Length: 463
Image 1 (tube, rainbow, N blue to C red):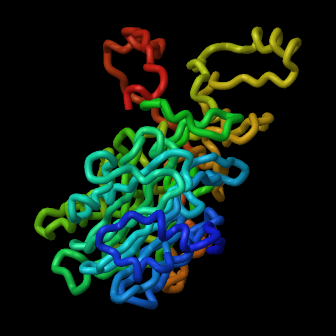
Image 2: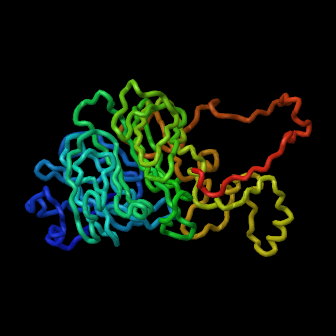
């Protein structure tokens, strides 16, 4: 639910703080009331009731910022401020964001719109906003010190430009960027085409989200902002599976998914059960002759990708980053490799001191999903989330595409688990097994002819 609250005691004081060259004092007599979101749920698409018409997007576990029209200009109000983001039920992070959430609200406009964005800084330090991918006047590009003075704490600045080209964009600070982006300051921007475009199709469902990463130690609430690569929370729109909503479609819907990457590594985003085409990049729509079918697309740091496909196959289909450690959550990464190690003797000794001690990793890490042990405060276990057949054993950057024959148009609610038709599920083979033929050089004992010692790198430094 979108809630409103007054951030300011008087519009006059705010107006005095505005630094804008192209906006008259008369037009700044009253700022748009900032709209604040307190829920982490996926909000219904915001249908435009003023300005040029368009088909709105749905922000996964997010929302779109309302606007007001002022003499033909579309006006928004962003408030940079500390926020609490629920990354999953029971797991909250203290971040910095916009208008009550991190990421901030999605901004939707139409090609050719004149856009005015008021940015109020309620952070303890200065900030600015860079409109990532936009064609705009140099003084509106938002790099503090280069294009403008940074917005001091407590002040409001105005950005104003024309949304010149349709596409998928982002916004984020360009002042103390290392800290402010590590704290979650970012948002999505979509510019819809004004008219029919030869390389932009109409779609039935249009989803968007940002990839983000944090280092939040179990028991803590604030990310470690000095971390460079060794993150432990990998998220879609600052939500971790199973806290992420599914992407829902009706059978044969044409679906567009827009993804932006503001982490410090690339992410191969993989869709099961369907082929898609990359129809848009940072530079705009991809010409039709340059597209090819994919089931995975790599979204590099600072890039945006649009993928499109026909949701032709019923079911619950995984949709995730293919870096397996990015589909894990915080706990368990520091456990040494114990595969094949017989713990029985040492467990007996440890249990005399720690009765609740449990072995992890002897048979693989699936034990993590089976364990029922007390967790540290404010965290979420690795490899979690239940499906209709047991633990999904995933986390982080993972969700599902749910395709149903009877999902009503415009209905984005979770339809529940897919009921697979009889005879279409993998099943146990109970007949005789034929002994596999082996190479002559392979020992009859089943042990490999050559043994090696493998030392895996620690941390995520190789990502």
